[in-house]
Length: 469
Image 1 (spheres, rainbow, N blue to C red):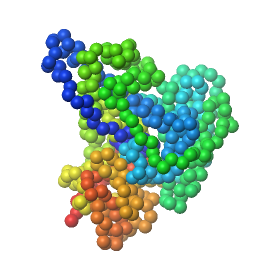
Image 2 (cartoon, rainbow, N blue to C red; image 1 turned 60 degrees about the vertical axis):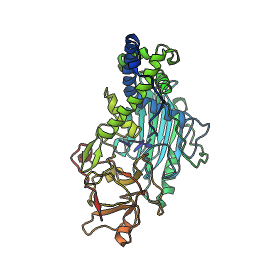
Image 3 (cartoon, one colour; image 1 turned 135 degrees about the horizontal axis):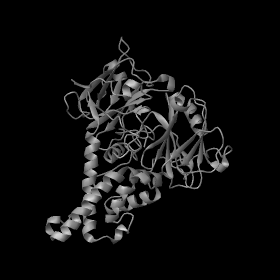
Image 4 (cartoon, rainbow, N blue to C red; image 1 turned 90 degrees about the vertical axis):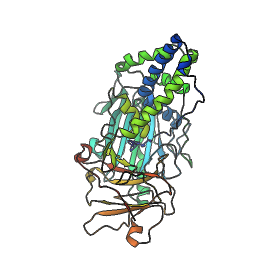
């Protein structure tokens, strides 16, 4: 999922979406005036519902997908109110979520706060990047637990639904969600191959328990092996609107009641969508197609380009900017807040031409990229195909280059020149610093974990990327 990535930087998390096709549609021009008015009104509300509801529907699909097991799996799936570890770095094999990272282990889960609060235990984590990003069903950030916000000592953290007034343990921090369901999107930095064993042990020590089991709730069970990430079945057309009705009913927001009430005209919250008129059904099918394209256009163009890199500075807190919420989550479900991670991406070279692996490119990065190393911060640049935004198989199994990549050859001033092409370079330095590309269009995503203030406030600029001979 990218605009990204805060995506699941924390699972990171993004869902594959494809342009739907419903075949021949009846034109409103073929209708009498009364029917045409009914069509147009339903269509306009349907488009509004699309823009409003894209992110929560994505979240609900992800929740169903990730919790559709009866035991934690090594691909991150786990029953509700349990944690699911992903026990390897993701690579080209993983095609459930767009732009997954190759930098961290994931430790994620979904919780239902209706019956009682949940308590998350975080172990002591020193000298390492980690985050447990907590999101409500509308992708608003509940809290980002990490070294920068709660320190490296770890501890117990209470997650409750707004309005809960039962007893709580003293001296424990409490964070409230607007919705019954929350997503715990956790990541643990992995520095190199030798470091994976240590990171995996830290991953095992996280615990999630109902409040009535605090503090002795069970440890994570050993996950069952699963060779692939689960595949997404995303609803389209009328099925999408049905799914929106379910999400809104389960996770109502008082502050959104006015706009949600307007959706009753198309069967959401009043009558089953199955019972709406044929004219309204046709209108909603077209509204889905056009709403998708409206969100997609915003996803492609709403970021701020600087030197060919597209930055997103407004993730995590959306208020009533529903189009921003939808477009950001179309690119990357659950994008982190800028203070925790930034994910600038690019599709074009210095002349604005689409990147393609049949060409060669280079970028020279400065010696000091502004990330807070004291909070575990680091950076990387990852290769994805341009169409679906998945990592690309290559013969050296290198999917990214970053501050933890070993055996890179730096320039005399400490800067680093990265070479990008499909064909492996012959020059020793270029070969050492080579980021393999597919022999087709591709995109690059930079990740700055725990960026300095100059990054997330917009004054920092990444260097330009140049096509070379």
